[in-house]
Length: 233
Figure 1 (cartoon, rainbow, N blue to C red):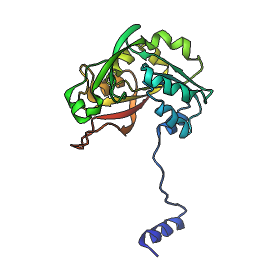
Figure 2: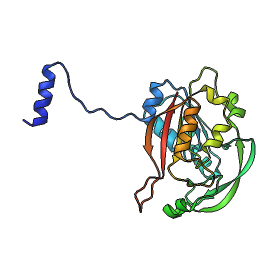
Figure 3: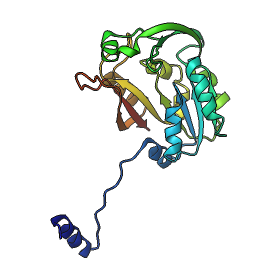
Figure 4: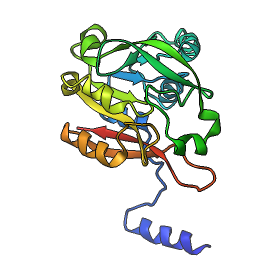
């Protein structure tokens, strides 16, 4: 009999047990906070929404994706889900049209110029063209997409444009229960806010960080460059 088994047997005599619990996922947090609607901003090919569904989230999903290449992919996936809508637009701090820099790998596309540290860490992320896309403020479309009784979770993956999106939704954020932001540990795009200032900014909006997930990292140095951070009120 192993030493570990002896300890567990002894604990059971006192009416307790020891078990290994799986760590929470984002979907667990959405369920725990009774989220009805996931606003998926910067949806790319829909991977986040697909993951939430696979992990048990059953509420509505509205995805926003400006790139035409990604939008055609995500639209096909959403056709099989009656509670998933997709829209070919970006969110920002003003309504109108804007040129987005399209990266070779698509996922690194951004409205902001790319810093050298990013392109050196991931050469396949270099910009190859520009595309004109529709941009709306969250405040402009909130009443169109969100039902009055819904509890909302806002996920933003916008390659350095996260704060601009939040600034375009200052009134709407009062109705947001939680959010997930992709934040950079070092500047990867010109003009973006890094994680230290964004944590202070989001806490000032009434949210606190509750969950961190590793993101993009430099394969040569092993340093993490981005992380996904979940916040709730």
